[in-house]
Length: 279
Image 1: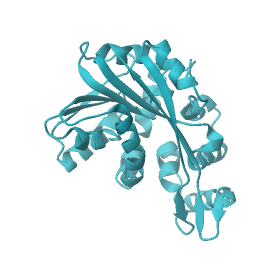
Image 2: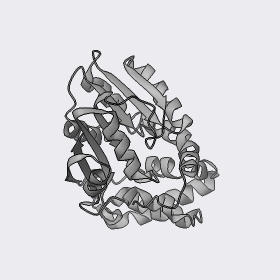
Image 3: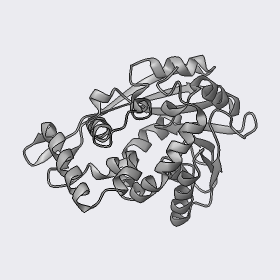
């Protein structure tokens, strides 16, 4: 069971649909950063040119667009998300990139609308943590994977190990008076080592294992790097701020990140985990 327990599927879909415009607003500007996480996920899944790949909780296109490059025009990427506003951004970005072999489907990973043994690989980047019934989702992954096919799931490590998202979540919940902690703590639900692999096994996937990835990106101290994660995590609330409110938010977040400053740069620890398993 994960930290999404107690929140029904409809509540989660509505939540993410509400955030969709904010994700699309920042998606192109965050593409380079996203690629740094997409690459190890795609490698862990073992994606090869010409394969058929299912991407779950694709949001506005990560890692579906990177998968499209990996499989090439002879392959196929089926990108899914249960939130219509997320898929709208994905379709726009796929069209702009000329990825005609990317299909966008409205779908809940707990009940996939695909036949058995349909895909060579399944990927999911920062999505499984938000599913109320993860065991059911993993069972669906096993069902749609071809025998011997491989799945890879990328999740956040513990909140304390992730400077940017952890700090933004804490600030936003305080600033906007958000009491529904489960929605905003859920990203870290599989942060405990071994928890993701155990859930994959419970869902019927085979030979599940986890890999730990740690980074410490350096960011110029003069850049308001917190704006994209603030915008995608608390989009409607941020958009409602007037000029004075936006300036106050910038000042508060700049102060919150001061412990990570080292001279002319911020050093921002990041910890993610990749779960890999087979059908």
